[in-house]
Amino acid sequence: MPEVTPDVAVIGGGPAGLMAAQGLSAAGLSVSVYERMPTVGRKFLMAGRGGLNLTHSEPFESFVGRYGAASARLRPMLEAFTPADLMAWAEDLGQPIFVGSSGRVFPKVLKASPLLRAWLARLEGQGVGLHVRATWTGWNAAGDLVFDTPDGPRTVRPRATILALGGASWARLGSDGSWTKRLVARGAAVAPFRPANVGFAVAWSPVFRERFAGTPLKNIGLAFEGRTARGDALAAGYGLEGGAVYALSAALRDAIAARGRATLTVDLRPDLSAAQLTVRLARPRGGQSLSSWLRKAAHLSPVETGLLREAHGPALPVAPDALAAAIKAAPIALTGVQGLERAISSAGGLSFDALDGLELKAAPGVFAAGEMLDWEAPTGGYLLQACFATGAAAARAVLAHLSAL
Image (cartoon, rainbow, N blue to C red; front, side, top):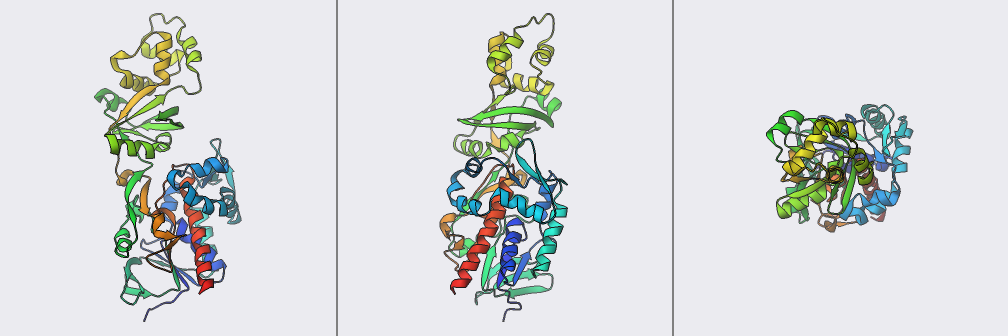
C-alpha cells in the first residue's frame, strides 16, 4: 500500500509547482509537493540575483506575442493569470513591486528570498506538505508514484498529480530534463530540448577578444530577418550574449541549425538617424585618429569602435554618409550556439499535442505545468509569468477533474 495519500501530488518545487499547490490547497485539498533538491525554489532564487524580474508591463497583446509559436496555447492561461494578477499576488505577500524604465516589473527589494519566504509561509499555513530530496522515478505496476528518498523508496497514490519538472537548463539547480524518458515511455510526445536565451559564437579577432572580452555594449539595436530588439549585450570571449541578443535567440538559433550561420545586424547608435549621424561625422576631423574621432563625434566607446572594425574590416568607410550607414548596420556573423549548460532557459519539452488542456492524454489524472511544456520566451519577465500562469491553470484543471469524478 502507498505510504501517504494526499489529494494531489505536485512534483517539482519551482514557481509553477508552488503556484499550483497554492491554488489547490486554498480550495481545501490536501497537497504534497515533492522536490528532488534539498530546498525548493532554487531557480527562483537564482533569478533573484538579477533583481527578480517577475513580469512585464507592456500591453497584453504585445506580451502574449513574446511566446511565439506557443502564444495561442498560452493565451487562455495568461488571460486567467495576467501580469497584473502576478503583481497583485506579490504585493499580497507583503512585497511591494515597481515598474522599471524598460517596463520590467521587480520587487522593490530586488531579491527573491523575502518573497519566497512569505510564499512558503502561506503554503505551510494552508497545510501544504513539502518533501525535499524526493526524486520521482516514475510509476510502479499498481500506478503509484515512486520516489527515491534518503530513507529509501516511497510510494504515493494521489487522486491527481501535477508534474512541474522544469526544462533542461540549470541542471545543477534541479532542471536537467531527465523526466522525459518516463513520459516518452508512457506514450507522450516530447520535443527535443534546445538552448534558449543563450549566447552565440563569433569568430572575433585575437586583438578584439583579448581587449574586449567581458565588456558591455550599452543601448544597441539588433536586427535579424525582420525582427528587432533594443537593449544591452555583452562582448564575451566566445561571442555575444545578453538581453538584447536573447530577444532574438530563437530565430538566430533556428537559422544556425538550418544554415550553419546567421548574420546579426548591430545598430550602435539606435537613437540617432543615419542623417543625424552623418551631420556629426561631417564636422572637420583634423589630425585625430579614427577611434578618437568616432569617440568624439559619434560617442562610440572603444568596444563599439572595435566591433565596428570587426564587422567591416578593412572596408570600413571614412566618408561621413557611408560611415554613418556602417555604424547603423554592423553585420556580425554568428557561427554557433552555446549549449544547454550555458542557457538561461530551454525550448522543447512536453508537446501541447500530448495534452488535453494540461492533462496528459497518455496518463489520465496527470497534469503538467511550467517550463517542462514546449514553449519558450525571451528574458524580461515572460518566463516567470508563464510558469506562474500555467501552474495556476493546472490547479484549476485538477479541481475540474476531481469535481467530475
